[in-house]
Length: 306
Length: 295
Image (cartoon, rainbow over all chains, first blue to last red; front, side, top):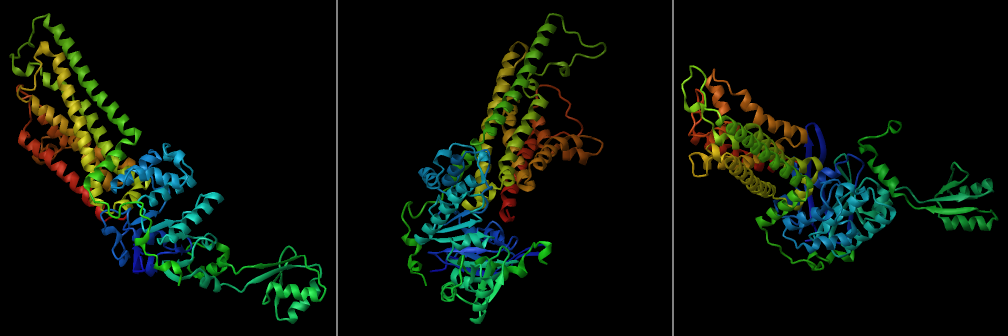
């Protein structure tokens, strides 16, 4: 019973457009799974189908072996934050959460507990309409936590959060997964996932592109590169070329070296008396791996990239 | 692969009881909170009810003044017209003034529509349905709460309008609930609010937009009966007769006065059937339409 969310050949069409195309994946408990894809890849549509809000044109998706929409009450099973704006601005944070809790038969004390957990205890009596996006995100996360569910879905939860908020959310997700929960977090930015997710599900144009660990995914990217800055350009280029490395000049006077690790470059330079002003490794860029993989499936590309 | 894998959900920290019973009354409580946690609800219902009762009471007061003024001079039927019951003052009609009750219909229908389209236009409906995937139960709870609140408000407005107007007219034939047709009129007035609110909810669930819902429901409840009022063709009038407004007008008509009911009149029984049919249809539409549609 490792598989908690399981999609099988999921299809969603809107007229002529196919938003989700035979998508199959599984999400396991205990790790944070990143759900990644460019804008319009079908992430939100897929999450809505997981929650039974949208009806699949074909295929099935189950949570804990059962379509979520078949359950009479949801909060004890899945906590979800789809869009922080899916609230009524005229209600207070407390009234919004109380209605959700009471409807699911949860004790009212949970409202104060989750508000405190997301750092919004002081804003409980304020109207949601006056909240910033970051506060609405926190409120949405509070709502997702109400039922203390084993499965949590978050659609672009980092939007609108300040750096402190981003760090808090990352720690929260890590903790929730550490407690054995299934945590699925969508994003269109690889950067956001780097320090958040352990597993990745990457989709483009509604199709599955990759489903693997973050480490495996990173290995698909280009080799590690080393950035070097030196006043003795010619000497260093010669030395590196002898060792089979490729040296490329970058705007701003730095050089990018591929094919040799930073420590070897440093030793070579030292041995030959070449002065270095900078020597640093640029980690294999997940962003690049992501861009390369999804290049053909970007729904809305800027003209210059075509 | 990771050591965390064997941490099954069963080992989650037990902050809540493992199983929470599923009860419809939980949803009723949730909808009650949703309704009253919007400031607009109490404002619209409070001000609306006061306005409706105010119009009725004012009409009774001015009628009482006029009748008192007339009483000082002997009544004089117009020349050549026999003295008949059609020239008798109808105190019941004073409690059920058309414009006041049409305003009440609009208020009730708008509040019913807002309860539903307010969830769609804000996107809250997704949060609601993710928390309670049983959509029909959610709408059934909304329908129950709104109907109950509207019935209470309708009873208050109808009973107050009747009581205060008849008291003001006590010198001029004011009625009590025991008089023929009086109780029927009060009940028909009380039921008009929940009926219109339910129609508003059904329209809100189908249209799912603010302005569209309100325009549609006002057209349905007030403009259609006006369009289908002619008597040249019977079917036209029959359609008009099947409207809640026509049914209400029939039910609040004083049986003790010779009102002209037209060539194709609605019977009292038929009027009650119209009430019941609209209520049932509105509930059915509201509950069924949310079941399958993507939100």
